Figure 1 (cartoon, rainbow, N blue to C red):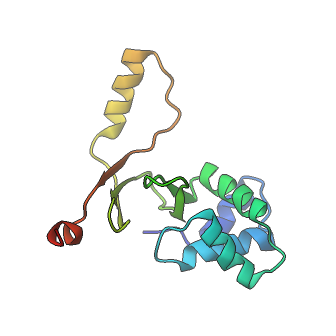
Figure 2: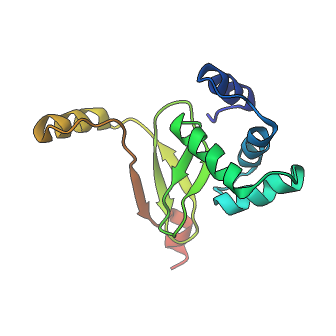
Length: 143
């Protein structure tokens, strides 16, 4: 289940961020897309709705939304991360290296692994990102 526009607005306010017109059009651009988007693509969509928005504002908004876990930042192997609307619980991604299809998954005792790594290394782990890159079933069949 993905986060809703209303839930995102609530989380922003709870964390002392205003829901400005610029932030709203960035959020709407991401929510309305079925695909992951680059910051430039988000800017293009947002700019069509609100011509006064700037690319820097898109990047600043994405930084806030990422920090709050409201968007997922995906590292699909290109020079630039892509973004999708976040899910309410912590999750990870399977990413197809050919078509870019993304599948969310969660669980699998990763918290235990994180705790073990922290214990053994003495490292304080604040967060983690786990992405598996490979080929989805349709791309495998296309070979």
